[in-house]
Image 1 (cartoon, protein in one colour):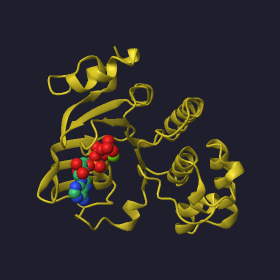
Image 2 (cartoon, helix red, strand yellow):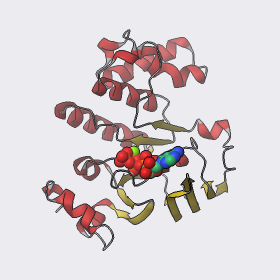
Image 3 (tube, helix red, strand yellow):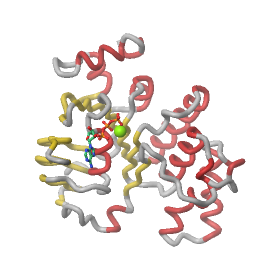
Image 4 (spheres, rainbow, N blue to C red):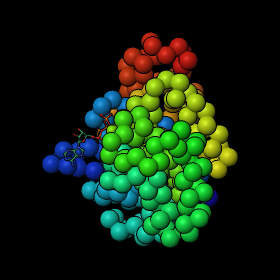
Length: 247
Ligand SMILES: Nc1ncnc2c1ncn2[C@@H]1O[C@H](COP(=O)(O)OP(=O)(O)OP(=O)(O)O)[C@@H](O)[C@H]1O
Ligand SMILES: [Mg+2]
């Protein structure tokens, strides 16, 4: 069976600089893929290219074995994907309307929108902010709204860029547990960028380490954390000093 998404000879260049150089990479249906790497490694760029929000410079992206034209992914395919960007990019409007937007665009009926938005607001503990303008939220509140907005459309693939980084610790723990349950039940394929080894260890099944735009190691998360290779050992060991979970 073909992978859900596959990259072939993919590069991304900006201002004559190589930002991504990935000869091949696959994302399989149902996996929870973590992506880790230093600042500026190319993680957010990779996520945007995978979600068809940005165009690669060269190479191909295949969806279920079918090459997708660069910069021209069909709307019905893009609608199977959902992304929560590193910067929340919430719109000027209420929290309710921001979370509803994916369903509004899909012309879902008002009564179902109300029901689902209320359900997701409750899960992310933002019900009390329903009528508040999303531009005036705190960083952590905005992240919760951003996650609810991405998940409400029940995507086939969910792309998340450091979605928990601004959450206080109790909220993060609770949300991670809820989130893991939701993802496992819905069997959503998830691509998750994070700097937090605890999140990576708890949530992900596969881990890719990206350094200088190249995927230096990929494999089952416990294996990568326990057996870094010569290209990832210095990066991972820095983290492991502070996170005994991954020793
Ligand atoms: N359009 C662009 N023009 C110029 N440089 C760019 C562009 N897009 C990305 N870059 C550069 O590409 C590199 C990778 O950026 P990216 O945002 O993907 O990193 P990241 O791994 O997500 O980092 P962080 O952990 O800080 O979020 C950076 O050096 C960034 O400055
Ligand atoms: Mg980033």
